[in-house]
Amino acid sequence: ILLSMSTFKNLNQICSTPTRQHMVDILEAGLTAINTNSALHNNISLHNDTLTVNQQTYNLSDYRNIYVVGIGKAALSAAHTLETILGDRISGGIILDIRAGKLKHLTSIAGTHPLPSLPNMQATGQIMAILKQVNAHDLVIAIISGGGSALLHWPDKLEGNDMADITNALMKKGATIHELNTVRKHISAIKGGHFARIAYPATIIGLIFSDVPGDDMSMVASGPTYLDTTTNRDAEKILAKYDILSSYEKDNYPLKETPKDPKYFENIQNTMIVNNKLAATAMVKHALQVGYQAKLYSTTVSGEAREVGQLLATLPKPGEAIIAAGETTVTVTKPGKGGRNLEVALGAFKRVCDNILVASFASDGRDNTDMAGAFTDSTACETAKKLGLDPVTTLIENKSYDFFKQVGTYFDTGPTGVNVSDLIIALNPKD
Image (cartoon, rainbow, N blue to C red; front, top):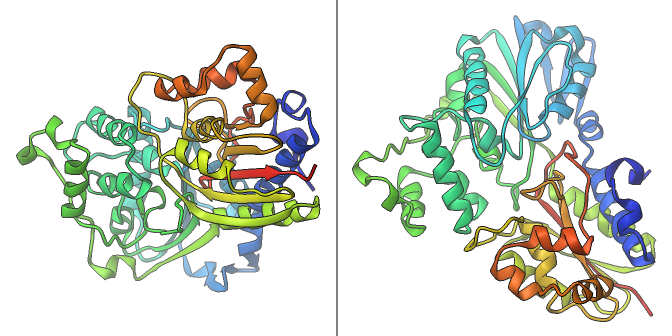
């Protein structure tokens, strides 16, 4: 069952051709496959006192308290589902998402993203207070999802504004998610396994909603419940690579080593709940169903967004659908407004011809703006030409948002309640 009416708010605007309708339906097949509620029910069940999480069982009568702590863009949706499964067994907890909602047993707080803030820090303080009071008789269920790196915010020796400045500088210079989160781990008192250290010796179930290409669980939300293998030296090299250290005196730069003692992680089970492979596989399946020769290109797409868009526009032969997922980067040189998915679609303008369509979609529904991404096809090219819009100049000025606002080929969904990085489609229908 596709979710067209509830997912895309501007269907009438964007579904003006059969190929565009195929694009939307393929995207929605991917979103349906990673629906938070369905994914949790597929991985978690409760029978009497026995909680089963991905074949691992827990006797809930063994625990004095059961706390739920959620961070990231899937946290609120996941919390709703966990409340239906566990009900009054939940002792309490905090859910920190970009949205707030009504929960029966848990406190819901809306934080900021993509940059950390004082409200994020205040909410993280409440989370840390829970973790500090638990012991070996308690169970902590941790919802860890994309967006959690910015939301879970407790700087170690740095001012909060410094962390925001560092994050912003790395993002603008095109740092990868692995580089960005390596640095975040080493300037935080809760990420990079510190969550686990603080909660030790409580039992922790980590429910991981991966937005990291390649699914390195230690990088999702900067790995709060995962043993980190990166070091201060790794973080220092990244800061030097992007010339971030020049903004701070190296001797005063408070890099904090992440916990390396295995004992903190002995009572933790981290389970992958959803990832972009689930979405991409469902997208390939649906593309086949509507008559395309569908191919999965990659689920670890990376690189400069505009270059990825140019490449994907050249790949599909007539009758083919190329499906991809991952996380590109944008090197920002001008004060324009946009996001990496918008730049993928804008980059495709240079190569789109005849019937080819290239779409790039932020699975969380927000591509650094209120748009969820955009697509390019020959009709969009004609519209841009009539409006006197130059995609090359727009890319130079990093003004992809304004461009697609005028052309109209952008996605409007609002927050989707899930985050598995970006979903990309290149279609070339038969004549």
